[in-house]
Length: 488
Image (cartoon, rainbow, N blue to C red; front, side, top):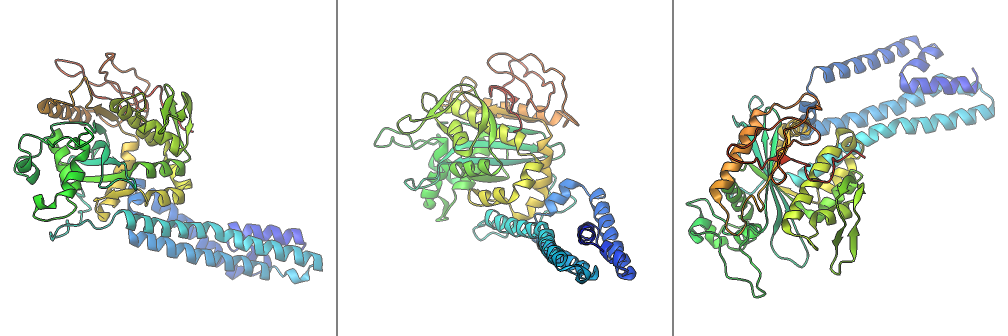
């Protein structure tokens, strides 16, 4: 057998274990290896075909699965390494000339290492995943209360039609104390269809009301109201609720770190909804996540200036932005205001939802996991993650709309709380009536009004009913973003 033939059979053995053994006359060993390999492939195919991919993705967040993946990858990697070495031996390269022995031996060694690489990557991914999940989904403090019950597989959402998750962006800084939630969005997700309404609340909402009977309501019976700061600033806006609650444990019988619970309850009361969980994202850490997915393609409608001395610039046009530029685009208030910034933040969220497809997440998983574990704080119980992952995949292909509670819809200085709850309830009803589309449709939407339009996300197209007695403030997630976001 020539050196070329030995190398050819070695490569074939790496793809079909047992091929080299059959060629070398080791028929029993070869047939066993080929049979085991075929059974492994058929079993894997049957497993994938008989299970929902969303459920599999959710299960892959469990420690038991991650441990199994890691162990299986290590065992298979060692087995494939040994297979290449033994295949080389049974092909009897010693009968070749010295130059042929050197060539085939070198290539066989390289091939043995190469076949281990995918298994090593899988094992590393499992380890990274477990570390990231353990750091993000820590057991929440329950103040002496028993831990929440484990979700039931047959009804993980305990009979709820919707799951409401508060998405917060915090401006963490070494020179600041406390948590200021400058970006507040409540995602209300239909657990059956994945249809989602994203409610955006302005940071400067004044006269915030608290649920009757709570410690904050007893402290502020007429709304959140504090004396002006020495510099004339206000510390009694919606974005200061978390910080104030954390700074005054005496209101809660000495219990520490009540800010998250108070803000969840306050926003839930404001919208007339029950908030299930929250996720707090460090806004600058979010830039690392955008870099991890390779950037986001956004249409910048006009130049966005930023920086202490207005030295930074995100130029107008459609381009892929890196994390830092995307965050400046979302956060800058130079020559702008809070409401324009809220719209730009919504555009960034919409672009990420469009462009962070499963393929991108898988190919860049380690970078994403490493970036994510440094920037997210949440009270979502780890066992719920198994059920939230399939729901998140539903949202990817469902109808996503948004409502921004900004002027002229509401007056942030003198909010109409009943109007806010009515609008939220109407948006939820409309979302529940809209079926999740099977595929993207080219059907035109109903004609919107210039001020408060009603149109679906560019990714999906469906007619929205017009709000009775007026215009509908519910919009597509990327409406008003200067053009549909594109994958890139």
